[in-house]
Image 1 (cartoon, rainbow, N blue to C red):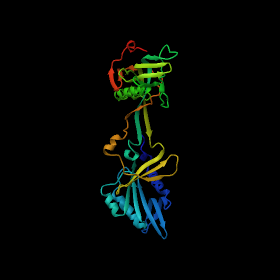
Image 2: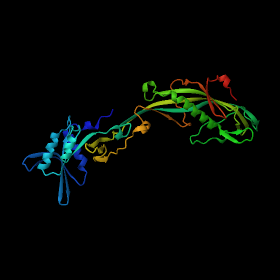
Image 3: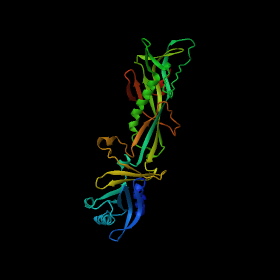
Image 4: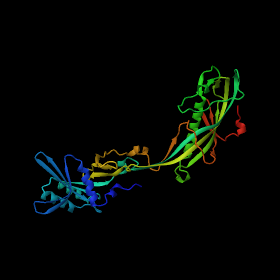
Length: 375
């Protein structure tokens, strides 16, 4: 868990400097830290931070007390500040604290014209859900068709017929399909689906069936752990009206196509601290109006920035769509991405029969290699 930014304001000196720096870049103010002045009564008054704002012939002075205490600020401190305002002819008083205020202090401060502010760490909603630190796991699926074996025969033979049927089943990165793999009608030769697109569709359906069963972390959540599966797939085109290919050496009639889908799952842990680039990032809340600001300083900048915090947190049903820390996300690579080197043998699963033209998918025991046969 990330360290709280409020803990970086170790003592009252750090807290006073923080409040001073909040206003130091305001061009309309003269901001002074740790000022001592003598009031009308002759008493010496110590001021943590003093703001002076001059407008033509008028001068407005704000006295600020900064309380980095372990307990809440009570009415007695409001009385002390009210006395200083009257004694030094100041216009306004403000108290900043990191602990809050005792019951009744708000109304009493308001009657004295004193503003109360609470300095605290940002909530998860203010950082943006799921919070300052975002962490989750990813299962990245890569799936590659191997041992593609068409059950086919030559329906018409042209010149120089091959001794065996060979088809180029490689998927290109640009998504272009080899036109020679377009299946055509047995009746009129009209174009049907591309054989490669059917392989991709079968791949996607296989992943859709496999992924729900891999809904937990494996290898005790180890970052970089992998699992691999081998899914036998049978594309059955026996009843499809489109099942012939036009090749340079003749017409090829495809009845079935078997393949092994090799699936590799890479488990990775992602973690990001949104506060990593900041020296400080805190919320300043008006204890009376509940208006909020964020005060932040980036590591690469000496400037302290102040911005309003909008009240637009995610609630209700929308919250269900927000990423939660510890969540497991499933990511699927493009079909052309190949499976890398594996450690050990993949687990063999039940087979899938993908039947055209109705595109039905059935789960079944894989056939033996002798039954799968070849062209």
